[in-house]
Length: 112
Length: 114
Image (cartoon, rainbow over all chains, first blue to last red; front, side, top):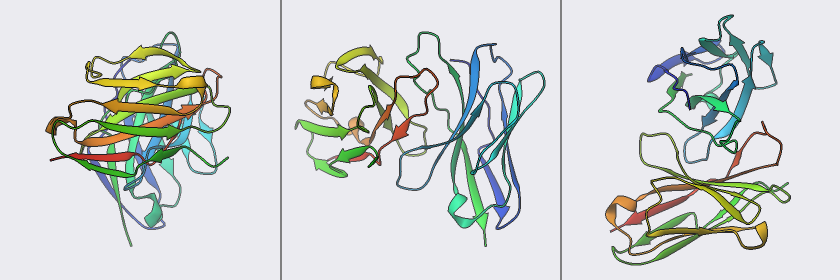
C-alpha cells in the first residue's frame, strides 16, 4: 500500500476549525483516501473517504488536491470529543481484501 | 446493529501461558480482520477472514498465533506460549462484502504478559 505522511501532532481550540493535512505523493489511480480516528481506549472509527472530488458528511469534510498527492481533513468546529488520533490511509481495493494499513497518525489535542 | 464486540476487554497472563480472545462481528458482515496495536503506534494488520476462510495472514502472525472463524460468524485469536512482546491491544474489525465498505472496529482486548 502507498504511504502517507502526517504531522505527529496538532492542537486546536474548541469551536475553531481544524485542518489536518496528509501527503500521499505516490498515490495510484485506484487508491481511495480514507480517514479514520481513534479516541482514547477505543478502536478506530471511520470518518470519511474519497477518490477525486471533495466530500462532506456529518462528521467532517475531505478536501483532495487536484493532483491527488495531498488531502486535508477538515473539522468545521472542533469539540473536546474530537480529541483523538487521526489516520490518513490509502486503500487500494485490488487484491488487498479491503484491509487498511495504518501509519502513526496525527494526535489532535483540543483545548477548551 | 450492536457493533463489534470483543471479549475479554483486558487479559493479564504469565509468560508461557496460552490465551484466547473472541470477536463477535456485526451480524451479516462477511469480512473480519484482526489487528494488533502497541502503545504510540497505529494498528498493524494480522489476518483477514472472508466468511470462514482465512484468506490473508501477515508475517507478524507467527506460528504461535492461530485464528479461526468457524461457520463464518464469531472469530477467535489464540496465542500460545505467550511472550512479553505479545503485550498489546488486539483489535477486531468487520465489514460488509462490498469493495469499499468501511470497517467497524471493536474496542479491543488489552493483553499484558508478565
